[in-house]
Image 1 (cartoon, rainbow, N blue to C red):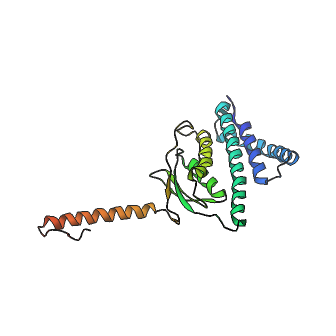
Image 2: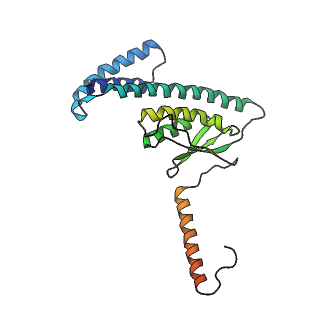
Image 3: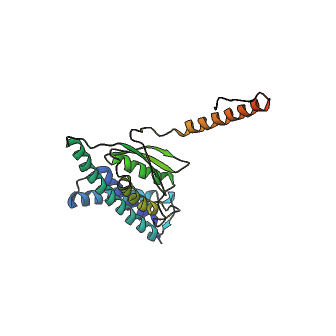
Length: 224
């Protein structure tokens, strides 16, 4: 166990580096980190009574390692996706076959799902269209869906790290759910409210049909 406010001060310093958006070089990174410490440590000490006094560093360090791994695989995929999209733009035959893939998730917390969804949208060539809360799945539109498994592979890698970062109930060892691919050209996933309304209308129509059928008039015979 260690006091929490110095850890919060370090977190403030890291956030300062990200907010400043410095060049990826040792001198500017170190300079901005030290500046962030100079500001973050006093602020963390001043507001130390707003959070618990002590913290366990073991789980925190494991989370930091998972965050680092997430950033590495995410940045790698962003670079690869940029090159892939540039190739398709410059290639005369324009090899583009859009698809929508339904990707069920193992992460369940709001912050975990949001992190995965935003990572997909930030990556060139893919965009998150919607989240189905009942199935806990994302509708992902891809620029080329001929190999769905290859598209979902980096998403699963991000999810493995997210399971550790956000202390989810499931673990990376748990099997990933099966994906589903929609026909080419499918752009808009069904709206959840619209699905519910259609289901209610079907139920009402069935009840009405049963009532008419019970009156002895033979009910509907047109097959509807």
